[in-house]
Image 1 (cartoon, rainbow, N blue to C red):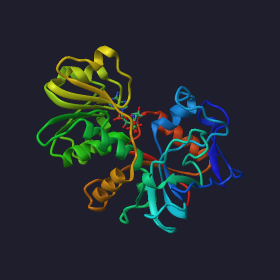
Image 2 (image 1 turned 180 degrees about the horizontal axis):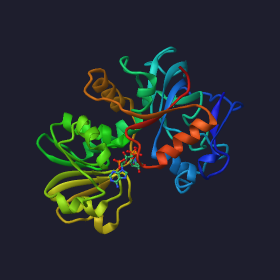
Image 3 (image 1 turned 90 degrees about the vertical axis):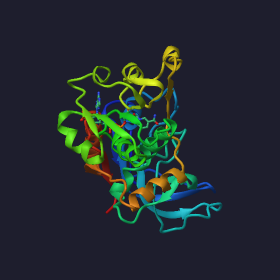
Length: 313
Ligand SMILES: NC(=O)c1ccc[n+]([C@@H]2O[C@H](COP(=O)([O-])OP(=O)(O)OC[C@H]3O[C@@H](n4cnc5c(N)ncnc54)[C@H](OP(=O)(O)O)[C@@H]3O)[C@@H](O)[C@H]2O)c1
């Protein structure tokens, strides 16, 4: 099969689409998905740079990628809830060998990570949901967002922020977000009630008494400082010091997405009922140049919505 591989850690120039990669074999609890579209997340370029080596000992050539949408082409003997021909999407598990990423024509996916793709969206749009959408849903759950609460969502124009704004509004929260001036109309169109231009203001200079903060940019000190007593802070973009974890009168956490069919189906239902929209920053072809350009776009830190690669039409 065709896959985008890296032969060593480094710049986007390491990415290469080649044709001679073995198609994954599936275990009893897996399905084989033919990928129609995949999306790019910041973890992809961090992994490509070698920044995940403390967590994963991969063997080269490595296939990166943790978002896919496509069709089921084979099912394992223990899989009962999907069938060949189903249109699905998923954030597959991270393969400990580094061989089963989504930058490929086929990926083996545990059935308990899959959900049926909403029929009202394209494969490209569907591929933009699993990782960022489940992150937003699960982190807002940990923050225990309730109706009427004041919530700050950092980087509202990014992949996670775009879903988090919409989900927090669904929960009835008053949502404040951060974005560059050029993205203010965009985040307001997603439902944000107030936007802070982070180039002009530090959050701690303009915000106070927040019930919850979802930190996607690593501003731990600023986020904790704007909480009211009993407020909850969660970061997905930084590690916490002991002092920060034990901030008096505040709940301070970090989080890591735990993909599962149930949460992805919840998102699919929101999408099918048009309660969540998906915005694509850009779409690239599944070529060496396309994969490199997609990574370079992600590394700008200024994608508006999600970056997608189209594998099959
Ligand atoms: N722990 C986990 O499970 C988990 C899961 C998903 C993501 N993450 C991490 O969370 C972070 C965000 O992911 P993502 O997919 O949302 O990234 P992304 O889509 O690449 O975010 C891009 C957005 O970030 C905004 N931005 C950049 N710097 C900012 C700043 N200082 N303040 C506010 N906004 C800023 C940009 O907005 P403007 O262009 O308007 O400036 C842009 O729209 C990444 O570090 C990622 O690795 C962790």
